Length: 263
Ligand code: COA
Image (tube, rainbow, N blue to C red; front, side, top):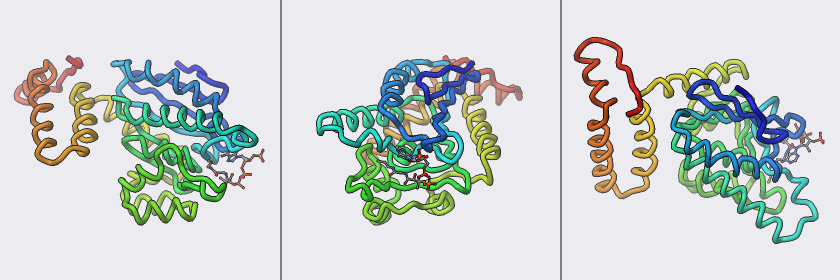
């Protein structure tokens, strides 16, 4: 089932996997205000949909998302600019906070807000031609959707500052070597297949355990270690009390495939 939530955003549902495609090839996927408004309205319902286990974000043609729609910055007053930034930040924070496992399938340029969007996802897969960067300094501006901070936390202050201060673009292969991009594919077809494979594997897992994994790793890694270790045991204990936890263990002992019901 496929529908448009904006002229440039297509949402497709395949079982437990939702794919959001930025369909704006002629502007390399630049994010207009109208696209952000649509995402802002769409994401809360997605977060509440327990039947969705994986969300894939991708683009079309040469662009994943080439950042904010720069044309919309031109001639606007400070208040409107700040409103746009707040809206962008709310959308990116909402992507990061999705309880489902999220995959950025980066088919081309991931610049500014596009790189920031990928940084909010749980996995980043990319094609060889994909390029990542925070080029705002070239406009006399800086990132506003968390890029400077999430990149510094992911890959260190020095590397983040180099990208923010120079606006340089780096190929997917370099970010793969640095451990930010999880997999690099030869072309779009291979990227789609890789994203689909990862999404399918995660979607087939025990639903409560997969959701718990995301909370555990993301929230736990922001805690002091002793608290995080306690959190890990609490999450595990709560899963052992679920039907799926019992089912997984019983199926192993009975040498059969488990049937997980998300209970
Ligand atoms: N906002 C609006 N339009 C954008 C855009 C953006 N962020 N990025 C690209 N486009 C548009 C271009 O204006 C062009 O439109 P046109 O055909 O009507 O002239 C089209 O997308 C193709 O881009 P073009 O620059 O011709 O392609 P290229 O291959 O020569 O260069 C980039 C590609 C990504 C290097 C270049 O488009 C670019 O620097 N984009 C801006 C990226 C940016 O600064 N993002 C952060 C914004 S805060």
